[in-house]
Structure formats: structure tokens, C-alpha cells
Image (cartoon, rainbow, N blue to C red):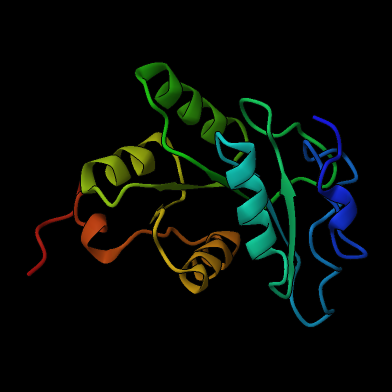
Amino acid sequence: MGGAGAGSAAAGSGISAAMPAAPRPYSAPAAAALPQVRVVCCLPSRLWNHLLASALAPTPGFEVGVHVLPGPPPVTRQRPTVAVVAPPEDRAGWERLALWARRDEGLRLLVMGENRAPLAARALRAGARGYLDWQSPLPLLIKAVRALAAGELWADRKLAWTLPGNGEPG
């Protein structure tokens, strides 16, 4: 767990093993014109978390951190706005995701997984506020994070029809 690679990071950015009360963001402070969106990467791989955080960091208005421990980031004064997570692998994982979503309504969960409608529907039913194919381009991911931060629900149009209460597209 040593700080290998952290010394090569750009000035003003750092890699944190978890999102502490005062995170060391990947990105520089946002311009005053844009509202600050705090994003935490909670994927199952430390490498994926750091790659995703590094890709999101240059986005104006984003403060990005990494949470590598299982479960949600700790409740702090500077709570993340959006957490990017992977779909759970088993029933217990789905139950934890649902509890996590209910426990903290201020934190919006964006699940990134395979482009499969049943998986997306299950994530949204469990309480995630958005679902995105893991192969989506970075601009679409940024758009989804901004939408969730604004309180919107995010899903591909064809996936939205799989939710209960929606009819077939006409």
C-alpha cells in the first residue's frame, strides 16, 4: 500500500487510499462559476478507481477522490455528491447497495456495469440514481455525474423502459 506513484502526480493533486474528512483531490479547486461536484470512485479495483479518478480530475467543477474500502465512504462534513460503484456480484451485495442508497439520500450512486437492461433495472430498483455502461465514453460519464449531482435520474433511454410502471415505448 505504499505511496508508489503518488510522487509522480501533478502538483496540487494526490492519491488517497480512502476519501478522508479532508480529501486530497485529484483535481485542482473548481472555478467559482461551476458548482462543486464531489465524486468518489468506489470500484472493486484500486487500479480502476485511480484510472477513473485521473480521467475525471481535469473536469471543471469536479473534486474527485478514491474510496478503496468495502462499503460506502464514511459520513463526513464534506460528503461526496456522487459515488461511482460497480454492480454487486451476489444477493447480499445487492442488499448492501439498497441499504447504502437508503442510508444516505444525499449521496447519489452511479452504477457502472455491463450494457444489460435487467442489470440496470435491478440497480435502479435497489436505489442507485443512475446506471451507465462501463464502456461509455468519458464525456457521457461526466454528463451522467453532473445529472446525478443535479438530482436527476440517469439511465439509457432503452433501459428506462425496463423499470416498473413504464409501458413499452410507442
